[in-house]
Amino acid sequence: MSWPPEYDDRYLPAPGSRYWFPERECQDPEARDAEILRKIQATMAWAWERAPFYRKKWQDAGLEPGDIKGLDDFRKVPVVTKQELREDQAADPPLGSYLCIPREEVRRIHGTSGTTGKPTAFAIGRDDWRRIANAHARIMWGFGLRPSDTVFFGSFFSLYLGGWGALAGVERLGATAFPFGAGVPGQTLMALRWLREMRPSAFYGTPSYGLYVAEKARQEGIDPREFGLRILFFSGEPGAGIPSTKRRIEEAYDGVCVDTGSMAEMTPWMTNAECEVRSGMHLWQDIVYTELLHPERQTLVGFGEEGVPVYTHLERTSQPMIRLWSGDLATWTDEPCECGRTYPRLPRGIYGRVDDMFIVRGENVYPSAVEEVLRASRGCGEEYRIIVSRTEAMDELVIQAEFRPEVGARPGALDALRTDIEARLRAVIGVRATVQLVSPGQLERTEFKARRVIDNRDLFRELTTR
Image 1 (spheres, rainbow, N blue to C red):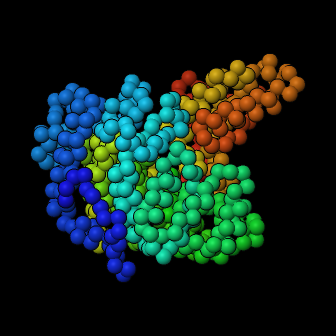
Image 2 (image 1 turned 90 degrees about the horizontal axis):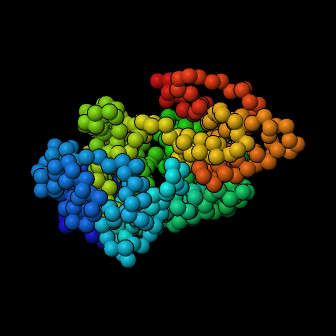
Image 3 (image 1 turned 30 degrees about the vertical axis):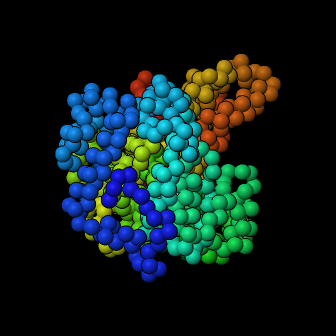
């Protein structure tokens, strides 16, 4: 295959085929590794010529693309962190010096919410977007979607790339897209009406929102199974990979729950995805090459061991990520899957983080961003707590913050402070938080590390107590 690859947008497998590209998906792993190496070499050569970011990084490490003769050599290439990407875009705005296509060839810009400072922008060229759509269509075929399906999108359509990437795949597959959206007050009640009227066969969103829709349906006297959903696939948070959550979703809707997703930077992010067997996420290595590295030594871990997924684009020409450190935690295996594909798998999906970031309703939330808001408020005292809990089926974020004595003495000042902080938090972290103001000195102090983040979500208890 030439690089970058070109796909026939008219192609579809035979209706009864389990595979999109059987010769690639069931390929001998050693033969696949040889193809992966060729794609890595082509990607690195492309980036070396066009991206000062990569050229300097590799020169500092004493490497150039011609040194990569095998996958063992590739392990010597230094990893890239999100912080490096943010710093590079700050130094070379707006898209960074790792943009490998002319600015006028960029066709889509997405990005992060900027919860740790300056947002990170994702630039995608036209040809890359076509390849992303083809990759997602192929993977969706693998977990059972077909052109006859109608997919209901209960996701945000904004800077967040997840819904857009899934939509591109559905459209390429030839299925019917129903991009309903999420996040507007009262929208979930409206969604129940449309789900009953249109009876789509598939649903995309976050696991939390899938459970919330089921909960609201029951409150309205509707059995979620009436919607007729056959497949529910999710990204944005680990829930769909947790057995108890998967079971709740499947029992609620009488459909199958499919776990997908890696990172927005790695779009096509769906290259971590379960197949129709649902025995863990396959790593579609011929599209995005994934390694699991030791969290501290950054050396490759063996199958059956825990590590941090590190991703490399094999088909991206715009902002290709080459050994991007995810910060996530997973365990991988090369045990055969019943589906016949020979990719390695993450049998428990993505189940944790190396750092302290946590996810609420599909949004990444950093404690440092919360602290920034509280410390900037003159009415807040010295101590605070971040509590992530679960009420019914939805994640809830509660911020307990001490107020200054002079604020408590003024009539109406506490209500005004609470309203102001909640509005600022929503703007900064992208999700609604409930602020509880408490008297000075009420929260526990410590001379060591303060445990300010408390995660009480029942649905993650099974995972953390194994």
